[in-house]
Length: 292
Image 1 (cartoon, rainbow, N blue to C red):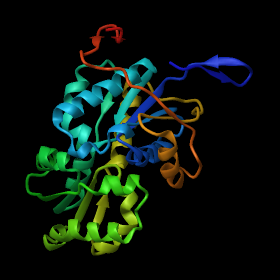
Image 2 (image 1 turned 135 degrees about the horizontal axis):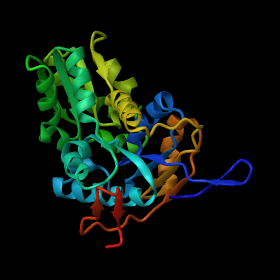
Image 3 (image 1 turned 180 degrees about the vertical axis):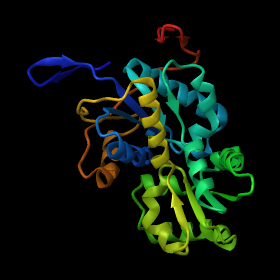
């Protein structure tokens, strides 16, 4: 774990919550953490060198997630939040069994909230998340009588990462993606990718005012708060500044992130450890051996 110099010259090692996404999408989860768990210190990682995740194979996604979690374990995190629906859909259950700290995903909290809120539910997500059918299955598990329509939106992540939210082309693409959901007369729309709430100004102008929006990040962080309390891990001291890391160009991430953070973040590049073989986890001792 990294060391910080606390006031009075005392070195402190606060245990942090790790958040990861393919890029800036996870900032929507970070925003909720700031709002709901303001005392928690955060380690943020954006896998910008390999985005978008939505067009990757399940095998690639699992490999990427293992590499990120191995690195986060070396940084001393106490919990990891997958701020990526694609990873949550394709890798969550597998890695929960491989690492000794709690790992939370977005699918179940978002699906449960949507099922409780609407009858005719639309989902916009990456192609990989839609193909997994994870949201539909989770929604029907909560309320079997709900109707669900899913639309893959492969261009959204790239447009957001390029800071083209208000580009006329983005409106054109969004209108095309939303057309079948409007035709289905949905009453609820799930942001099935953490990038998509950044498009709220666009999406809300294209759908009827009666449609309510579900941001799984809100409900994921609420679930994290419950988990921290149950495990006795919630911080009761002021948070340390969030540290930002990316696998790609730090300057590009910072320039896009500034409009949502309200300040220009300091972003560092990190080379992830290869996870060609699984880390050895001793669940009884809670230790992770990353030497192999």
